[in-house]
Image (cartoon, rainbow, N blue to C red):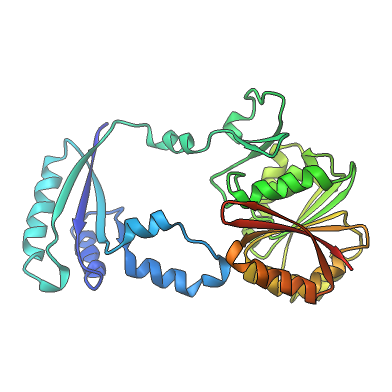
Length: 318
């Protein structure tokens, strides 16, 4: 089955009204792309990231459009759309409503998204495999099997790569690992693959707990080897007390600078004199802020790794 992608240019102030008119006329599954809405979303959630894809921002520059899809044989649907647009163009608040029609190649859309997730090497010993490639030849690397469609954390990002490289050098055989901001569970699973005896993943998003547990199961890990928890260690005393009951050889925090800075005062409570803290997700421009916060919390910086604009710190208790 062949499809057409129909792009309708509008104005930021009129995109909602235009979409409502299209929906009322029976055109569903609309995709709205609007730079102003995107930037508003970023501004309201800037505490959760330091880095935004510049290519994506460039693509959205000045953009305000609606996309919908019709079968290339749906002549009646195309006629209805063109007639509707001709009527709507009489409204100045909606913009010109220029229509661009692009044929899409015949593709199995239900399966094609999987092409975006090939095997991804991590460090010198691991390879991340999507679950549908679980039986693929790993060329001697240890597999970390994930459902990449569930949440952030597929091993490709430099921040994750640097944490794995640090773990390869620092994780003792049978050691214990605490992963704060565990997301998909990728770092906890990687630690277990590298020989950790146990790993605990903690995330503030309750969905992440189920996702991490599911991904661990793909790799044959379950409690007590792997434990997934939900909570905020800076606000949940009960969770904090639970986590402090055991020492950890490695504590991992791969988030963003502002969250690391917020966590800094409590991090020493998870560390013994022999523990190592690995911090990643830090832009070079925020490195001084992070090192200042962890130093003030009683930690000393041991090493700083660099990949592209990202930095990864290893630290210990003073």
